[in-house]
Length: 260
Image 1 (cartoon, rainbow, N blue to C red):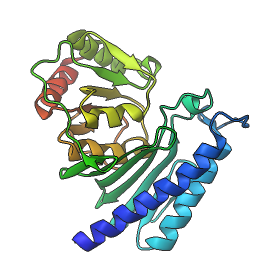
Image 2: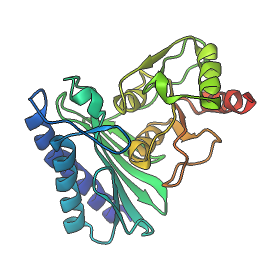
Image 3: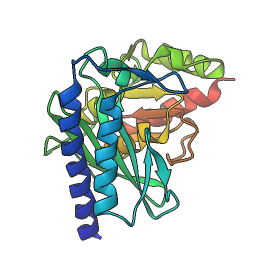
Image 4: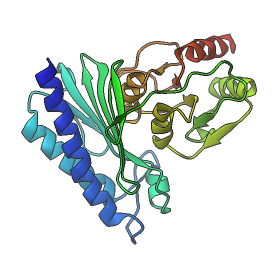
């Protein structure tokens, strides 16, 4: 088992290295921005970095399935499935903001298992094994324990992702905390593993937005689930709550479940 784990960690890091070279080539350069069917932007950096990740995975781990944001999926019922967002935070990337990341996740039996979050511009990399270990640039890291929600640090990708009941839930959680910061995409997930962010609240995410992060955050001692408290998988509804302190995560679930 350890041998297989090491194999997959090596593949994930190789994917991070290869995709990082491509992303750095396009960062803060004039680049064509296309609009996808869901109105989100996509560039050559997204497409080319996912292609090289997919090619490495097919060559080095043909037994695994694959789910990528840009190129689709295959064999997602396999025991092991790679889940990849080549450039999480494309909107920030095209404005020259270096707070995006490449997310390379591996699921085992539809459960987050290994995660890599790579930020090639800042030369930062998080690697996590779910519920076991998280490293930042090869040093072990732990999330932060806090005594109360009030005054804790919360991130969400954007306030516009919350509508209807989801918006009421966001406002209820925010009222217990006091402040929310926005616009860091998956980079905020890495900051939670480092102990600088206490709470994450997200809606409308796709599997490639959260599988790698779930492994990293749980590896650092935190907890990331859906809003019902269920473990994340390929079929979760995209509403995500995470806390660096599992006790705080329990409090968040109670707040969420009280909202009508």
